[in-house]
Image (cartoon, rainbow, N blue to C red; front, side, top):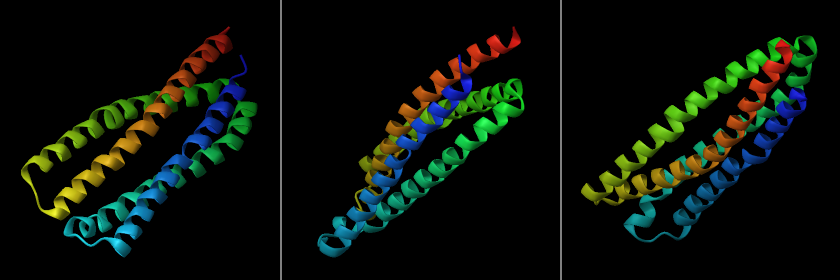
Length: 170
């Protein structure tokens, strides 16, 4: 198994997936601008700021992940050439930490926040609260979908790292 190729392929797959954060962030920002221009009702006007904030957050998340993973690709080869055993160990440690983070944040905290926002919708009827809760649910749903796919990729990459670790110990 060529773990360097697998690591590079994983990082390249991340480079394909993270622009979706940016794309959907731009959609949220465009929705905010559209509501600002044509929104006539109190509820439409209430969506302007929450959708703008959600759009900016998604865009920042996407750009941060993109540039982090882009720099990782060149670092992989250098680190692997210097010490393949240390490279696999450090990647295993990083992948394990990321998987735990996904479990705690993406698959526990985000669904709980979505439920809390949905509950707020039952008890609050002011436009700004409704718009904020609905926008938060939409933004978190986007994060949940994209990170759910990223979780599957890193879980597979983690399995490949475990195999590579065993091969290097031989």
